[in-house]
Image 1 (tube, one colour):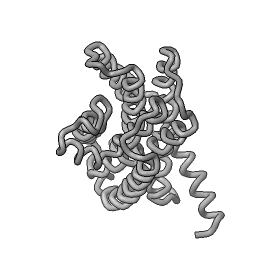
Image 2 (image 1 turned 30 degrees about the horizontal axis):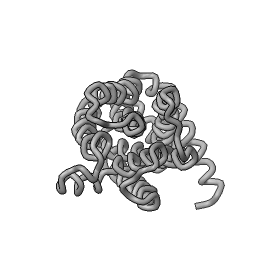
Image 3 (image 1 turned 120 degrees about the horizontal axis):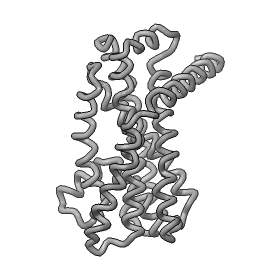
Image 4 (image 1 turned 180 degrees about the vertical axis):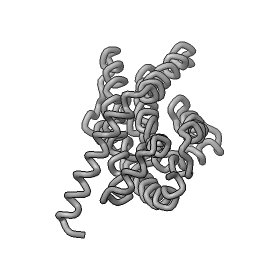
Length: 251
């Protein structure tokens, strides 16, 4: 693949990103699922504080916010496009499936990073300043990529009904919150819970957030970043291949 072709496909991916931001990210799901849902869960656990420290809760709020924001719209973009009959126009354009997925993913990544400022700001107001801001920034970026890829993987079923994908997405996302160390440290989970936590990408970003805000961690930073990178690659490759197989049944 020539450099000129790569540059041209990158420009088209960014055009898709701008389209997604303009059309989809002004909709309610980003605000409701990306910000309000984690905030309400945070307030519920803070109100019934069982000895959990505020830095512990803030790091959990950050993990939930990035997770819910990056997966708020990415699962339903293609079903929305298919329902509106605009997916056919995109497929007819000289773009590859990788370009289409990259454009959708980058839009989710940008919003995941952008809305992460809110819980960090809440923490700063409460006097909780990150101990390792650069590591935290790197973790947020990598986690946003990973969670966006997961959202696109969840959108691979061949349907043009967004509510079907939203139901599937919710069935996966909410259990992950409770097995990924967000409210209960992984080491305090029963053995079965710890085994499941290892399989959740949210576990590793939560651990990064805990280290950067509290200075404590369950896994090493190398393991956390490596796990998020591996999950990102696997989710992205699967999303591209599965979308390529199912796109013809959407239109």
